[in-house]
Length: 218
Length: 228
Image (cartoon, rainbow over all chains, first blue to last red; front, side, top):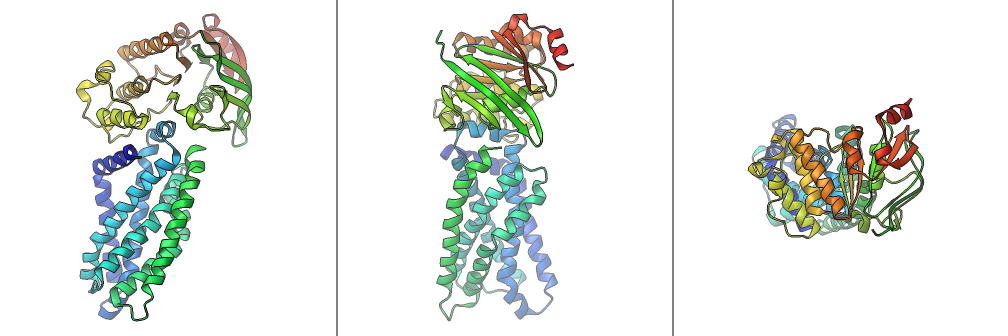
């Protein structure tokens, strides 16, 4: 597992132009959203949490797809499957994708504050939501990227499969972020976080179990 | 020589979509034997190698590797199989040095010194694989097999893309594996290159077994005739 993680970080570092592309894409998306919402300051603030998660979701498709491009370009996945279990290959990729998406979320926070005039409120809560919410995107996203990578229309397949599945994680993340941004007078933040945690636990376990069928039986 | 069959195929079939690409193959290969897989384009050589590597499951029939069915648990079998397929199984962004470290760490073994020297890539040890020619990539893929030294070695068109030096490197590697008692399955349409390296041959045409016998008795006319 450590060898696989090391390989994933090495691939991310050597392919850092792709990392920069995801970041630029997310920043450009936020910029477009802020312009499309108009000049109403209050409306911009209300929309900030939703737009933050939409930007992360859209940029995640680039990251997730790229994570399996390296495996399929020269058949590296075949060699990997002969040497390591499918579950360890999946978890190494999912962990790397999670860390990248969480880092992307942290980098976007100052941009959100600037473009949407949003007060970052309870920063510790916001970071917790980003960590858990991106974990909720990373596991099913990585599994579907593996599945889509076996298809010729990978770029088309991934959003089709991935977006509907992560709706519960996305809704919980947006709601928990809103409460972190604007305050939580009714103490609802814990409930949304519990929902998000349950989603993560279920999907990290389920996707790990399904990875064998998807990666090995090609 | 140990006469335990390392490969036993019984009614082995593989379907891709609606087409049967391998039809009812029956053969055995003993430990330490080397097999030449011959046949024209589309004969089913590469598909058979993928089945033998356990990367593709059979659609019908039974395939046993190392005395165990591939339907049971493929992990212990996979640790003993090395495949050099149509692709080189490399990461374009990683260097030969990175690749060797990854493969040795995955196999839980020490990285032997001088491996890149043996495949004549020592001077490019820190260049990314994307800057390599096809022949250099194949030599790096060969280094993987030399490092892992598996019991069953599957080679799909191993001489393709290699220059004369690369071809002799590949031939030396196969001879060395045979001398160590490893089992080698070599698929090639260059049968004159493959024959001296193999004990037996298996001729495929349209996914069916057309002929099997000593590799020395296989001729180009038999391969051409099988296709027609």
